[in-house]
Image (tube, rainbow, N blue to C red):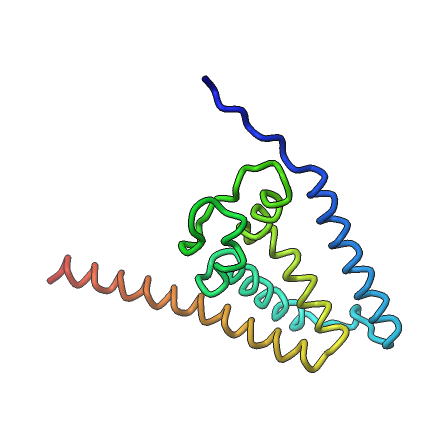
Length: 159
């Protein structure tokens, strides 16, 4: 007997889009009330915000430190970083899909980082540059590991 696949949780998807839109509208209203103008960001700001968003999204979707956030919404235990969302057809599934997809949660992370950067520039810069530096560290660590592995491989071949 073929198992029935749950219908995607469209109503929860719509609710999440609504929450996102309301959050963005709220940030826009606060920015306007505070005289903040996010369009004054520079190319450097965009690069740093991009790196910060990358790191924040990867941390939420894959890192052990935030596995407790993913745990209620995934199959099995949330400690490996490659969990599958539960297929319940309800809000748990939709939230699980959001939290386990770095591209999906990346949009929320970007909105949060740019929102904080706009509303509270000093705190926003502190968080943004910290996350960006951590993201750069991830790339440097990966590059170092790859370079070391390649050097070891060459040494073994010529050895």
